[in-house]
Length: 233
Image (cartoon, rainbow, N blue to C red; front, side):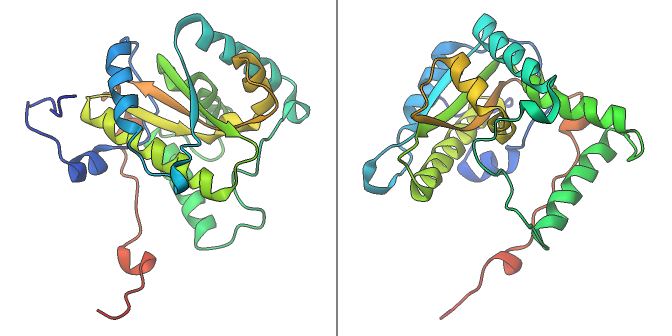
């Protein structure tokens, strides 16, 4: 698969890492399935403990993708009674520094959209766009057998990161979306997956709408000295 950006220069891993972001507004431009097949073939080189390769995915566009959106919308309309969480997306009792990071990124997003905290209706509308995949024409749902444990979930994360970087290399964009796991049973049944599978995450895929402010605000990262302890250097 060629590794070129819009200027025709080769993209390295470092560039792909810096360019990758969670895109929250996509154009309606269709994605070539042959390109996706090349990306997934390359992503199969992702590592996994014991070479289990626990990841499994369903990739949707068109009516099948719309069917998932419609089914989940029906559950959302039920309010809290409609929740079907596959797992706790965030740990219970989350404390700082992690809680501050979570709160801060949300406020930065709404700030970029100029939605004040008191405008609950606008904030809810933006949140609900999660369940439309932010307009992405393609959605990938990543799942695995329920017999898998935390090490295999880490393997799935490495596979997904590989896919996201390969998408950048191909000029595409993505947004990982664990939010779909809040309605896991409905998603699984709509996809035809049995109860032996657990839904891990969605991944919205398409071409970024670079004109939208939601795709332009800076997403902070902590410095390495806050994340890494050096010993013996």
